[in-house]
Length: 283
Image 1 (tube, rainbow, N blue to C red):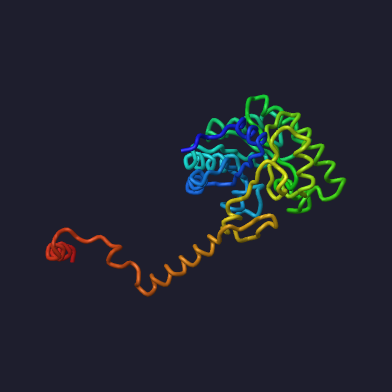
Image 2 (tube, rainbow, N blue to C red):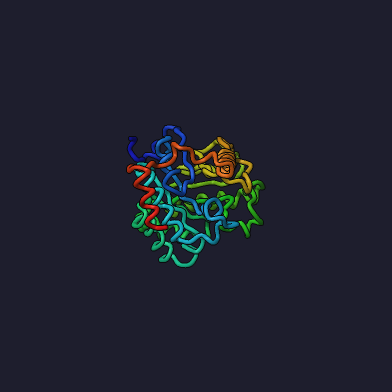
């Protein structure tokens, strides 16, 4: 079993030009598959609100939701670097509350780091959490928790004005003590420039190749989440199709009594005569 990587390993990978591969995962089975496949990191994203819990967005997700799913992921992938995603409302109030909630991820779920969305408006939170000795990942670009302010789930940094603001955010996030940055749904030209300006690793989710690694949502890449598929997702499987077809076959087998077969049932150990006597006792 490979040794779990640390944040220092990711800095070394950046130095060597070795790309980091990570996915979101939310439960024990998916996490165990990720570890077996050799993923470098797992993000227990607040995207679980849509992918797992069926919400329309990420806003309803609570700290307890995130902690519970992080615990399951840690049990499934004890040797993978796990990042807990700070849900909406867990860090937007005071610096002290932000630190307290970040601490919960480490103490209750054995996470290795936390991630939070936003640039300059959350700088004091990033600094406070980092000062508490916790590894912080920043996240700018398309930030789902503030999608309402962005006008929906839309790519960012496509104009000079928008790109300028993201560059300022990226620089300040590093200065505040974040140890890595996630860029979501921004043009690769901007990704490349931000990567050149920062010393911390810069990762992409829909932000192109010129960075230090890639993140995808497991439900998107596996074809599990069918409500919509972002432009930047490559589907590596159609797991939903496989599951639906299996369910359909099961329904047909039940209704036509093709299931269960004899090999699927348990057989009595005593004689049928003894069982018939037993049944008569209750007639």
